[in-house]
Every structure is written in C-alpha cells, then in structure tokens.
Image 1: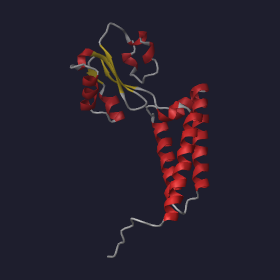
Image 2: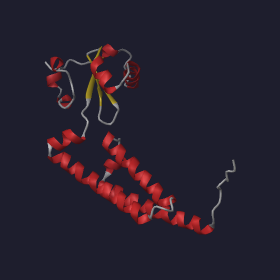
Image 3: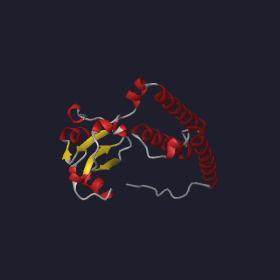
Image 4: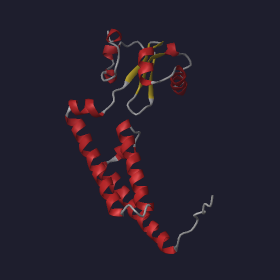
Length: 181
C-alpha cells in the first residue's frame, strides 16, 4: 500500500488557505456581532448544532478546493440569519418556543431521585451527585431540587423552606403534577 505523506502542497495553496482563513475569521467575527452573544454563550442544543455547522462550513471553505469560499460564506450567512430569526420568533411566540427549545427538567425533588425523568433525559445518579458536589452539597437531601437546564447543565437549589408553587424561577420546569402542590 503506497500512501503519500501530505505535508506540503505549494506556496500558492498555502496563500489560498491563509486568505480563506482570514476571510472566514472576519466573517465569524461579524456574524457574532450581528447575531449576538448567544452564539458564544453556554449553548442549548439548538445553538450548539448551529455552531458546529458553522465551524464545519468554515473549515470546508478554508481547506477544501471543491467548496468555493462564496458557497461556504452563503451557507454560514443563511444559518446565522435563520438562527437570528428563529430566536426572535421564540421570543414572540410560545408555540415556536415549544417546537424549538427544550424545557428544563426536574431530576430530584426534596432529596428523592425522579427516576422517570432521569431515564427520559439519560442522566445518571452519579451525574446528579457530581452537580450536588459542585454546588457544595454533600447529601441529596440537602437540595430542594436539581434541574437539568436546556443547555445541559444542572442547577442545584439548596434546601429551603419554599414550596414548588412559590418558586417563580421553576415555573417553566418540566415537573410531575403531583409534586407541584
């Protein structure tokens, strides 16, 4: 099997790749400024997918000879515009928000693991314990609730004398009806 080690092409190709890399660097800076901080914050699933796609398109436009830079730029601009419009629609319409955004999910309630929610979200007891430790809590019973957020992080609400219905910040969390009382 004769495989060639591809270390060097030629100066013309190096200049072409360098120019493309600079072009896409400028494009991504402009895109982040136009679309907003959302593109670089903690990602929800939707934002993560868009960012991976943009990275893949940029790499293709920089390195692949059979992908014209303008083609990759057009695809990136369209994705950025779609993300911008979608996030505006999500802010204006609960129906669109329900389709696009995941909802936070309650994983523990007053020290009890909610096994159905854990199975549905594929979160293990060990992962919840890790979140508890990160919050400085050493026993599950010392947390009122652990919530799996839309960006994949877990929020730990320490034990306090508050009922679910009085916790405004939990109003959008997916929780079994029998625990909401």
